[in-house]
Image 1 (tube, rainbow, N blue to C red):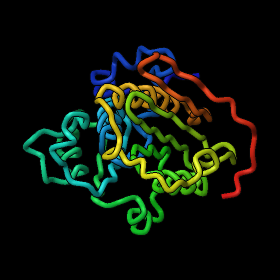
Image 2 (cartoon, rainbow, N blue to C red):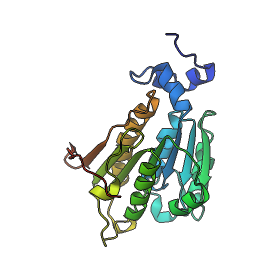
Image 3 (tube, rainbow, N blue to C red):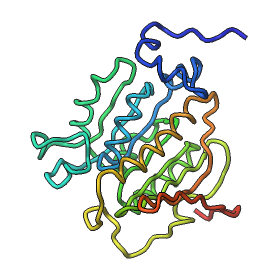
Length: 247
């Protein structure tokens, strides 16, 4: 079979990544044709935006209604003091769109629920929920399942993190609400203790899995849930029974 031909531009910008087993030339071409949504441009989403843009994904959409606050700066790596008061999605786009000339970045200064109302027919290869909002994760997971889109969600609290992925493109499996039912407790990060490197570690793990999945010909994202403890250096994968999702 003939090998894919990469442009000189792709080779120049992503040559080191192309050398990685599991990426290679075809994988880099695949990445350049993928379309991803990142929901939330906080501690997790800013790290995700950096790594996914730098991987050469073809189109990335940023969805976040919030403005930068000074308290964000110790863990949200896209922003500086000069950005306080500006929309996170717009600032992230402005800063990252000069990283390469492969990736198209689209910013949406709205929450995910309103985004869906205004963009019903938008199609993605993967939706990456980096929000700190439980209701939003249920919504994004169920929307991904309904539309058969690969889905990843990550969360952090203090020194711990959760990685959750489901390949709704390939099989009808459980959604976020099956494993994490709604509670009355507000888990938003403004009420949680955390340090920046925890966000970086958990998001880097997720981005590595996403890049390899999107580089494959058929998006081979695996169904996983992992519990991550940075203090003990433990990463525990949960073995989940097959269930019929009622949602």
